Image (cartoon, rainbow over all chains, first blue to last red; front, top):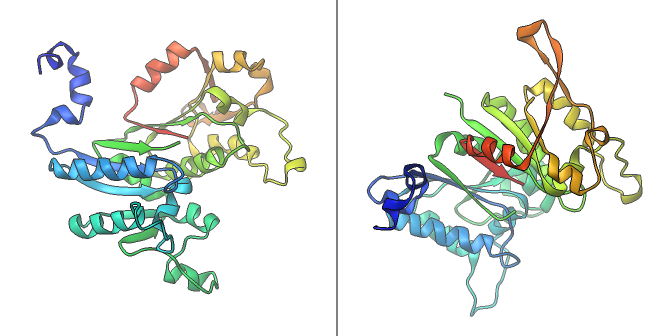
Length: 153
Length: 133
């Protein structure tokens, strides 16, 4: 705390961790796929820590290869973490809004039941707790949140 | 009240999908009537080069879309001077992007603002939301 008093006021107001007693509304953007890149893990750890401190996660938005975090068909080795399942469980516990970008998802073969029907595909692969929606959801998170925190890219 | 949104473009246009998917966010975001700026730094400056041709790589040339940004009220496009110079480029190598100012009888104005690294840092500092691609 002694150190923080030497920081300019503005820096203090920008630091989530120093806000201790104020609930911060946070948006999270995840830009990289699971396992290939630490961004997906870091985002999960960050979300869990922020919720643990009593902050609000307004939305988690999956973009670019980040949409691949939402596939329920991944089978990581049993002695490793299952990133998608971690999100599904966190979603259940905190009623998180996990949004997968539809434009990015379509390119990469991620789809829910409705989208599979609409596109005439024979399968869907979105895990429980995620929903597919548009990029407007990311912009809305930027508008509504105190902080939009980006992981990856 | 509108927030200041900056889209920071840092990567070359076709080596990865970031440039294209950044542009998609910008176009959707334009409908939300926020105060929007774009910045191009590092290899991101290649996104704005003129006369792009993707014939040899089998990918869609999305560079004409940048010239439509003015119609979406996206008219603050910051290009970092040092990034251009480091790549042997100048403003002449970039598309001439313009917008029409309805407050001045639709006068055509340049959208690109050539700024130094230090100046851009101040612009970034002034933003509410910075999305980096």
